[in-house]
Length: 410
Image 1 (cartoon, rainbow, N blue to C red):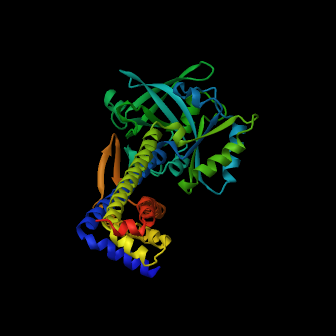
Image 2 (cartoon, rainbow, N blue to C red):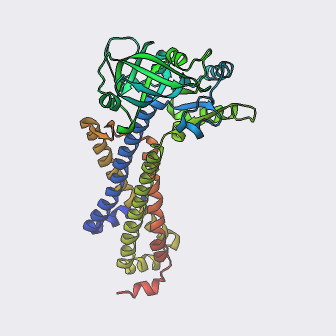
Image 3 (cartoon, one colour):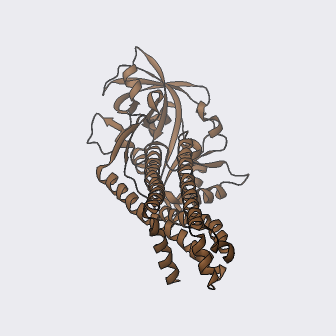
C-alpha cells in the first residue's frame, strides 16, 4: 500500500501545472463550503437568538386553538389558574427548562387624551420575563436605567413607532382602553416608563404592561394565562423537549398545545432558506470535485496507455492497476482538501478577529463565523467519497486495457 501511495503522488506531480490547477479548483470549493457554511450558521444563530431571546422564547404553550386565532388575540382561549398550575408543575419537573414566563396577551387602545391608536400588549411578571427572554432589556430604553426590573405596576413600555406617532415622551401619562372576554369596556391610566425597539420593523406595535395592570384592565378575578414562554438551558435540546411536552399535552383530553419558535415566527422560513443555500453550496462542491477528478484521471489514463500496457505485460494484475489509479484520485482529493481546509479555517479566524456587523431589517447582527466539527468532517468525507467515485471509471478503463493493444498505442 505504501508503494501505491508513493507511485500515486509521483504520478500526480509528473504534470505539475495541471495538478496544481485542478487542486486549486477543488481547494476553492472546500474554502467556499467552509466560509459560506460558517457565515450561514453564524447568521442563522444570531437571527434565531434575536427572535427567541428578545421576544418569543424557545417554546410557547397555549390553549388549544389559540395559535390559529392569534391575530385576533382572543381572550376566551386562556388557561385557568388550575390549568396553568398543571403546566407549571410539568415545566418544573423537566431539568432541561431554564425559565418560563406566563403572559396575558391583549389588544387595546392607547390614548394621550388627544390622539388614539391601537396597541398589542403583553402583560408579564418582569422578573420571570427577564429570565425567559434574556435579551429583552437590550431593546428597551428606560426612563430610569438603574431600576432592577424593566417594568413596574402602573407603567407601560411603548413601541418606538407609537412613541413617535402619538408624540409621547418618557413619563407621560396615557390611558389604555380594552374590552374583556365578557364584552365589558374598561380603561386604566399608566405612565410611559420606556420605549422598545421592534424586531418586526416599523409595523410592530407590541408593548408591555405589568401582569397586575392587565388583570385590572380586563377585570380578572383570577389570572387567565394566554401563553407561557419557555427558555431551555441548551437550545440544541429543542427538538427533544418539544417532543416530550407534545407527548405530555398531546392527549385528546389535554387543553394545552405546544409550539416551537419556528411554528410561531415568519423568520423560520428565512432560516430554512439559509439551510437550503448551504446544501446548494455543498452540491456545487461535489460538482467541482467530480468534474475535476474525472477530468484529470481520464487524461492521465489516455496519456499513459503505453505505460499501462508495459506494467500489464510484465505481470501486474488488473486489480493492482485499478488500485493504483484509485489511490491517485484519492490522493488528489486528500491534498486539495487539506489545502482548502487550512485556507478556509484561516479565513474564518480572520473574520472572527475583525467581526462583521450589519443590520438585518431592525435587527443588529454581529457575525462571528464558526464551523462545527461535524461540518468539517462531513466536508472531508464528501470530497473523499466523490474523489473515489470520480476515479472509478478511468481506473476501471485502465485495468481493462489489453497489454498488446496498449503497447501498440501511440
